[in-house]
Image (cartoon, rainbow, N blue to C red; front, side):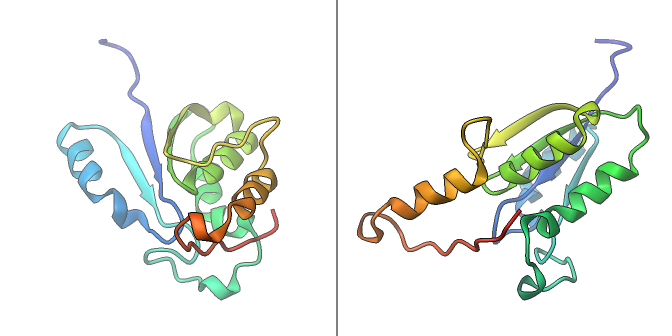
Length: 142
């Protein structure tokens, strides 16, 4: 694959995580010579914003949006989203379609034309609490 441009991977963590959750994959990618960036979403990892200051998913995703805006227009990346990170990369794909070469959803929320964030949230809320682990979901408006 000589002459083929290597794409940068952008690793996006899920809820209640930070860029630190990619540490094993980061070590492997680094030793393989691949380019990657792992970001802390707002109020996650070492990001200075506090969770109580977030009022929307858009604010949570802002570090990813800022990163994609900072790329040269000709650079295309591969987004990797875990869990709630799937929603984050979905929003980024809609905002920057020409800068995304591919997206990988690692057990991630994957909204689509007929499965929006709100419909996913409504479906989770219909599952009786006795049949699922008690998980807190922060409901933010988009």
